[in-house]
Length: 454
Image: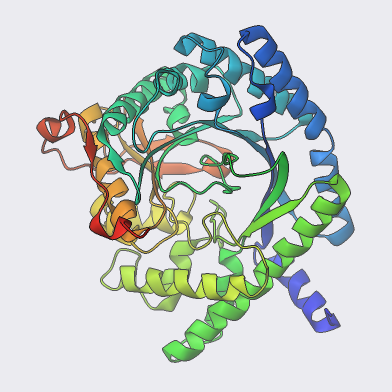
């Protein structure tokens, strides 16, 4: 039972501490839309999405009004389009028609993003998957709501270095294709190792092939709530610090569980998971960096940052898993630069570098996220950064990801503006020593020895 004190406490978190449900994401399987005729494929996709998601936005708004809980985004994820389009799409341009259909369907039902313009190529690539990857720059440039992802590695299969090399080229091409908007296309493209099938957060959301016909996944967020709670235990020991984080994560996740259950019941669609990630926004007071500084760092990036982040991530998971029977997705602390004012300030102060961010990704939920780099950065260097991050995920049996934005025409010291939740970011320096000879090798980096568990 929820008592009056908990109701009052939750209202306070919503009104003063930036607590929100970051997204209700409706996963829709498109496997039954597969057709060898491209026009039929597009027709089936549009009809399936618009019919399944026709009430998503209105139900989300009703829940917001009734319970007073902000639901920032209503989104859709679909089966990886490289699979859905394989029978009909013979060229990258064919896949772009599917992207435009997805975008049109998303606009019709009123969601802000639709994810799943994706390919899963951790071991090798089919021709269809290669065509989809090659279509990404044009697809992102000619749509508004499409989000794209490519899974190029896993602990079980190793790292597909041919895909890593191609993705470096695609990131650079996506930057060029949207250079008039500070290379915004790259903000909607993420490269994964060990991508989860049930992630509600963009840009990496897609509906895994093990999922049902439709599912409701909810992502909650509350960096501001955690920050306020930690202010009350300044100077206390680690035991009290950890207990405070766990209790707060529990309360935040219960809000997500409530919304997920209501959305599932009203839409008549099964509930999947609650992702209890701390996902920041550019708003003041809604920052993971500020949590780390409240723990005791002068600035994020200072010695001790990785240890503090590891502790935060672990306690968030421990608190959250007690609040819901089905916790999934990524779940933990996100450290995007452009979406977190504290991270931006740390870059300006000189305490946070790309290398320190990479170290932090060993213990956080995702990876190198929303990082703007000089537009002159080569495709090979981008591929090298991707490969490093994929190796961290592969060896540590965790999800890692890269969302780099080489901002064409800008260099270190400049700012890139993306708008909305995507925020803005300072251009960060990149190690300028080359890795072309490494990246140009063909084939796959084998899976680590501890992958053999059968």
